[in-house]
Length: 231
Image (tube, rainbow, N blue to C red; front, side):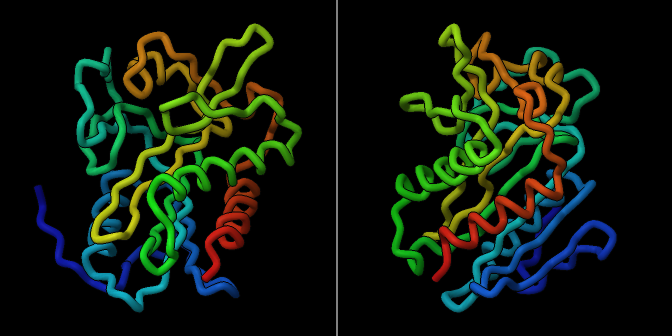
């Protein structure tokens, strides 16, 4: 694996990144048409370089197709990767798919400065998304006891996952975050046992009747995360 030299500057090319400092001092970056491997390397560099004065950042990402494994993931949950690359990551959780039509929301937070515990932070991530999809007209979003992420509960009571969640905490600071299916390739999830659960259904907002484009979703969730984590 290529070694990464920590650097306080994140050298995203202007073609794939837009960064802005919000009024609440969280730096927001939009990262489009990029690889998950590159994002992971840059998150690690940022995490290792940050200190007590480093502003928190919010990375909003759309990446190329990839199947990712969490630290404790069982590779046997990859059924047939085919032409989709597989990447071992340093996040928590099991196996999932990322690709176009999905919004990755990665808050890079100093939880010590925020005064928050990890479990509280995870619940807040989930609640932000629940409130956002409710504003779009979705009243069926719910949690599944003991499993991070968010689900749609159908009229028959069957759960389908529309948002995965996996974090890494290093020295009190977060990396990784949420993956929200907007209008993505749901067939790709048939190549895996999503989040380690054979037969778990996966859906996206478009299938549920909410047609929201990536930029609109990124802006809306960016504002909600800014408000929730202002310090």
